[in-house]
Image (cartoon, rainbow, N blue to C red; front, side):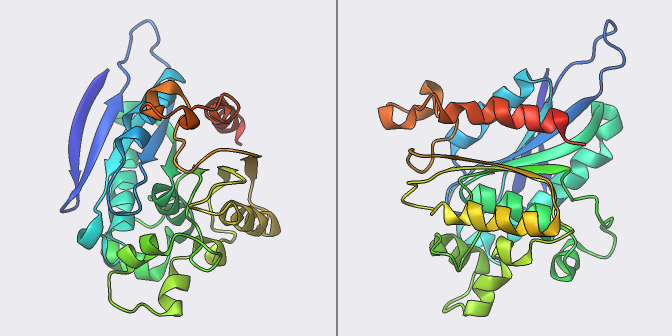
Length: 268
């Protein structure tokens, strides 16, 4: 396997995990997964980075992890610009990497970035930021995996995340609504695998429910899983990502990984 970094835009860094080709398997064509760690747009959480990559690699996919701009550097929704260029890089190297479809997975604020990429990919305001020579549609994922995602700024969500990407003092309700993914979900949105826990005290489960409801109304394929218990930030819900906190281990919730892989394999 090849592992290397690529600079995306001015600050974004894309780490690429590319499975080796084998003369014994010359016709293997793989799906790819682009990973967006969470961190409230203040950081990129390691627990939601490489451990996630390894799971999708084990499923036979090539994987990519984006370390996007955070804090003051995230203003003007720079992470979405970087995510778009990451998708462009992957698709432009699809033949070299033997890639057919490209998916994205995100956690918490990274879930907002993932959902935004799947819905805002062609918005005029984003295309203006990407530049006149950016190929239209190249940044749209074939599907998204949204993990306890911050999707709405108007449904009791994590407003500090939105304040960071808005990047100005005293943002208006219009500013918050602009980046509330569920308000803009429509026929252009990517299919989605959505999971959350009903007692998440940081990002209310209504974020996932409202978004799924909007996709259903527009006829966009989705799969929704809501487990009854589990704190925010579960990541894999396994020992590796629990960092010594037993509450972060949940065998039931850990099924989201094989469930999402199965959803990807069966998505038409």
